[in-house]
Image (cartoon, rainbow, N blue to C red; front, side, top):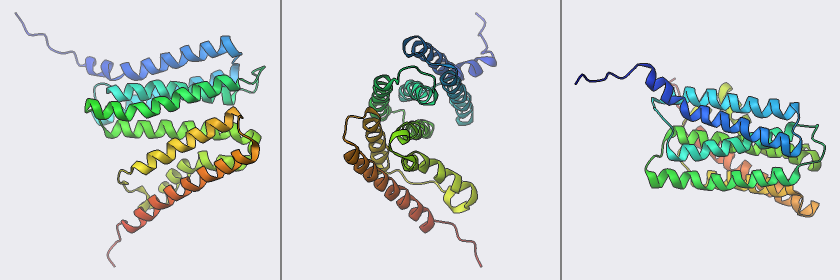
Length: 244
């Protein structure tokens, strides 16, 4: 019996299955929001754009890493990413007739719960990877950014510093060469990111008195500054110095 030779486009197709499933799920969730809370054009544009960008970037990352498919933990992160896209859509849409606070908070809680699961899934299945860790980190960062935009509407623009910190750090690396170094793994960094998400979701729910909520946000911002400050100090101490 002749051996069947693999078709060259098969790997191309398999690599794109995961990201495309994520994009389809994103569109389905946006459709549900449109029918349930009246998501308008602005929200649709933001949510769909987020889904398309995530699909394109993740597909390219899989190709660059030489991977043929997403791992089990990556699937958890992908589902969480679609919920983050919904939070972005609700935050960006000024035409929703009634403020969907309960829906936004519920989706944010689901995203936080999934964030607590993907790392454990990766360790138990032995599928820890650099791509998975980076994907998880970027989804975390975007959720924090979107939630900070939402909370800043009621508590002040200073809350945006929480969401913008990660992106300011990345932008600094474009200018300062030594800040592009590879940081060591640190569990505290994950704890700090999770804390930002929890505090921002509570602030979005508006269930804590204003002064107490401001104090909690200031404390979250303080530990965020400490975490990034420690990373910057480590990069400075381990920078490559050109010989004189």
